[in-house]
Amino acid sequence: MNEEDLLLGPVLSFRGIGKGDAWRVTALIGLKAGAQIPEFKVDGKACAAPKELLSTRGERYLRYDISCKVLKDERTVSYGIPDGLTWNMTVPGKDFSPRMAYVSCNGFSDPAVMRKIIRTSDAVWEDLLYSHDRKLRRKPGEGEVKLLDKEQLWHEKRIHDKGLQRFHLMLMGGDQIYFDSIWEDIKALRQWVGLPRQAQLDFKVSKPLEREIEAYYFGLYKQRWLPIERQPWSSATAALDAGAAMASMPTIMVWDDHDIFDGWGSYSCEMQNCELFQTLFRHARRAFWVFQMQHALEDLPELEDTTPAGFTRQDPLLRPIPWSKVLAKDPLALPLLDNQPGFTFAYSIGPVAVVAADLRTERSRTQVMGSDTWRQIKEWTGNLKSGGAGPQPKTGCQHLLFMSSVPVVHPKLPLAELFLDKFGQDHVIDSNADDLKDHWSHDDHEGERKRLLEVLSSFARDKKIRVSLVSGDVHVAAWGTAYRKDLPASETWSQMHQFTSSAVVHPSLMGVTERLFLAWLNSNAKKPQNIDVQYVAEVMTFPGHDTHVMAARNWLALELDLGSAEGCKLWATWRCETETSFSNHLIAVAPIA
Image 1 (tube, one colour):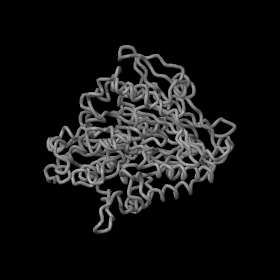
Image 2 (spheres, helix red, strand yellow):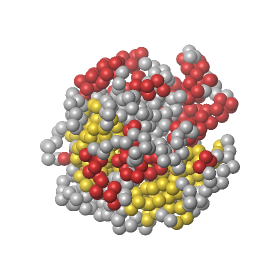
Image 3 (cartoon, rainbow, N blue to C red):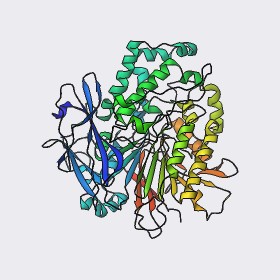
Image 4 (cartoon, rainbow, N blue to C red):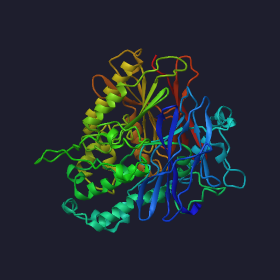
């Protein structure tokens, strides 16, 4: 295979821990029409023939199995094409704790907003990759050379001097790609935006338009994840961007609205169910299944509406999908929770468990997740084995990370909600209304937020496992807590931390109007939210900063400290972009005693 035949990838996807301590990872690549299918090797051994996920317009998208065995000690594993392009990933050792990076919002809704950034669009990705892999750092003559700060130097002896990379996994919390450009790039949709509302609702999608929509959703991934203008992989100055990160860290991806289009799920019932919106969602779902979940398109079942005849649904009523049967023939299937219509999945990885929640498939203005999804989350967490206290649990879990693409703890803006509820209806190119309606703290979702806190805190109490929430979406860095106010402080199981990290590409709040909004946001963040007689959500002062939310592009490190006598401490480290460098903001979360 010639490098110019490569359209996309490799994109790594984590598939869980398999039998015999297998670190199960797949690699997705896209090839031009007529290109020879390359042989892949991992750890010096030939991989099996790839599985074809999609063939469209002559392009082929293939998934390779690059799983390898977990040994006593962690190690860096090479994979790729013999005598050709190769990449590296780091596999943890036995009795390990995976080191994880977290990012969200890898793109932008409007090209004009990118003019506001002071540094390059990929500056935050570059910093993440500098922290991840010493071999990727620029040398004199290859571009800008940066000094390492104290946080980066901390990892030199413990990781980089051993020939290892810092992160074993990368959690991607939504908006891995922005499809908002579809409203401008497809002429018929650009015209639709200008129609009266009733004409929009009555709009019929022709077969040619549907083919154009399908091609757009399948085609944008390669344009955004491996752009043509990008320096090739073989170049000494190959880009340090999302593509480089996804090629060196196995990913765990959930989707959010921009992976469909801005605000999906927060429009009126009539607009959500109109023919055009449903067509867009169907093709966004198919593209997400192939490119982010790395499954064959032919294996994706259609969603079935179970609304009784003669009734109009407000919330999606979708038939549960028996994922274990649907994907029974795929040995590298993601661990999707069974009998739910969406894409929620979960892992148990040594002392940490990860629940990757799908907050979009069943979303409406008054619903975040449907009853079947709630039931399956409770069942999966109820079966999780606790590791208990101690410095090095070998068989159980001490921390559960719940990936919620939208923050559970965030400043509540009741006046803005009231105003936009009255005047911000169904405008697909105005994100202000839907951004607020997306929030768990919005009045329409407040009851479901109580349910989430009850489910997770009851799990923490029963299992003695610390729960933390990891979120993105809001284009600021923030730290929040949710807890039971009716309990003494000694009942630490009720305390849940939330780490909000956003965005890795999209600019933060920078304009004059946005700065006024930021001041308002910080003012409201000072007030704890009394959700009910039991639960409180509180945005804390951001670590090492003088406000509650920090307006800066950022990424997050999540690392467990197995050496603590009181059990695994979870260290959360935000790296926030400044005009000239990056600042570090750390907190430590102890396990439940």
